Image 1 (cartoon, rainbow, N blue to C red):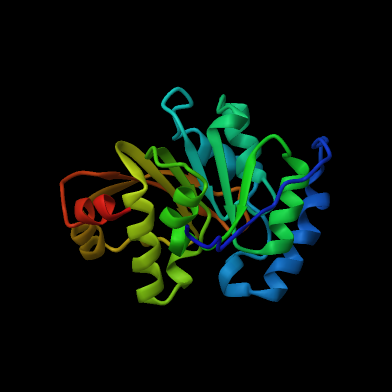
Image 2 (image 1 turned 90 degrees about the vertical axis):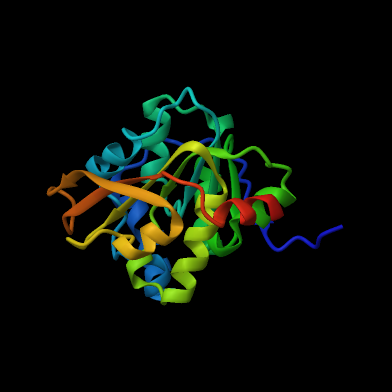
Length: 220
């Protein structure tokens, strides 16, 4: 039996209607603890969260959210029509994980590293590939080996017709062209959200051809 490398962050109180300021303090605390891990100083705006959620078809199955933070994108996904039982939230920061679990007690929330996404899902008997992975991870702030590991975990956890949704503050794509080619994926920028602070671009990636990721998927 595999040893658990995560904890379930399950809260007991129903989420209320929260104002933006209520969500800023836990996020700011997380940023102060680990700025590179958290990425941005403030949570995603409502408009950015809606732009990301708009790329997800709620009829297609499980949706995995990476870097769930304080729940801005989670709320947008639910508003989009994704059912709570379809959602799996992954948050590396333990305090944020507990906070989001308290706000969304009906959703399965895991404290863990996206660099071990397959293991997290497998331990929790979630072997079916995701129809969508929605990521708020700071990919461009990661060291190249860490970025590659996270991306391999993402795309091997994604179904063949699934989408990976990622935002970035950079004018550059979050996955450089040569790396996307090596991974066998293609991406397009589908939105700019200029009202976000700072402005952000939303990208959607799809698996376009078989690569050695297929072998990685078989190992999982």
